[in-house]
Image 1 (cartoon, rainbow, N blue to C red):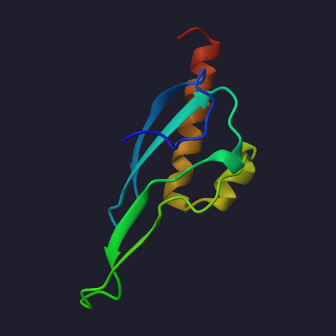
Image 2 (tube, rainbow, N blue to C red):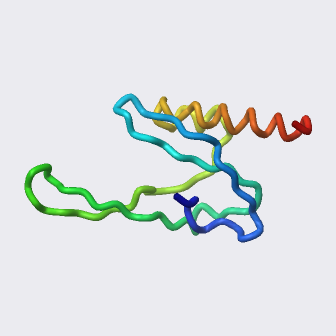
Length: 100
């Protein structure tokens, strides 16, 4: 898996780890330093059968929009299971600042 496109080529990314939703969906996330224009983010797409059992396949983007928020606000806008990713990113940044 790769991070969404639209970020600066000079930005360095690193995985923030993985978490799981209550329904068992695996969430992969990245943190990066650098410039990123939320309007320039381009999502990959996903195909799924809808309605289930119909044989009709539809395709839609996995990311519908991108925006910047402070950590507290971000956690209120996310799936509660994904809020753990914000905590992990904050911990990684503190660790980096302390030279760990």
